[in-house]
Image (tube, rainbow, N blue to C red; front, side, top):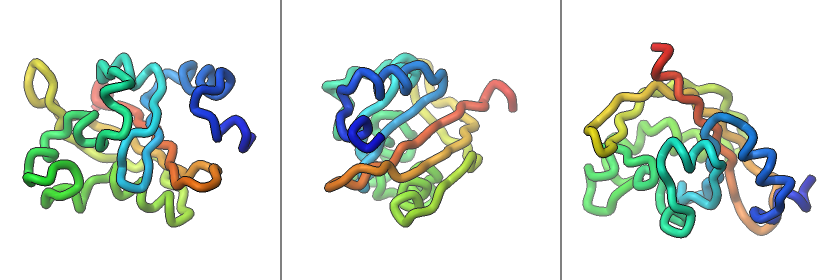
Amino acid sequence: MNNIMRNFDDSFYKTILDTIPVIIFVFDEDIRVRDFNSAAEKIFVLNKPVVLNRKSGDVLKCLHRLDAPEGCGHGPACKECVIRNSVHESFLGEMVYRRRTRVHLQDESGVKDHEFFITASRLPVQNESLSLVVIEDMTEFY
């Protein structure tokens, strides 16, 4: 299994992630996008070369990414960000399972509130700290 997780281009790994119909991201310790599945690509209209290594708030178009000149991770609301905190907890060895949060995301039609369940777990790769984050958008159910 470790050999599969080490190579983001591996077709087996990509097939598994792309078959899962919920948003999946792989983040590093700075909450930068290292990879994502096809559900994330379609829902957030992502272009892989543009998105890779950008902070989560920029990729998800979080309204609070603009709260500080330094961007995502530096505003007052970022301290309470469930995505950010879940990734950090996963690096401490904790499994975060379906933590509920409300986020404000901006798209071409304006700002929308989303109700997410966040699950995060550290990935078993060597020489790198990576976290797999599953985002279930429950907005239509609430």
